[in-house]
Image (cartoon, rainbow, N blue to C red; front, side, top):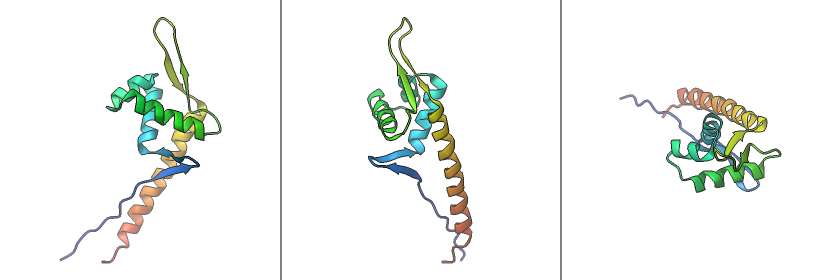
Length: 113
């Protein structure tokens, strides 16, 4: 009998405070970019606003430049916008993620158990 084993793994980038970027955090950044709001991004991920805000705050504190800028007030309420540094962080993570997945696929083909 031949068993087809595959390697699986998770990728994240750690900073001094612990996790800086990971799959879920990057998706949150993308949703903020797409929705223009932390609240709407959180809802789209079925996440509490409080949790989303804590993640954004953690990423902003660990980054040299803010990834998300929040605006308050106004007739239509506040909002949030992804900064250039935020988009660069997204791009960097997905590039590393693609390399990581390719490594897992290549190494899986070499499993001989």
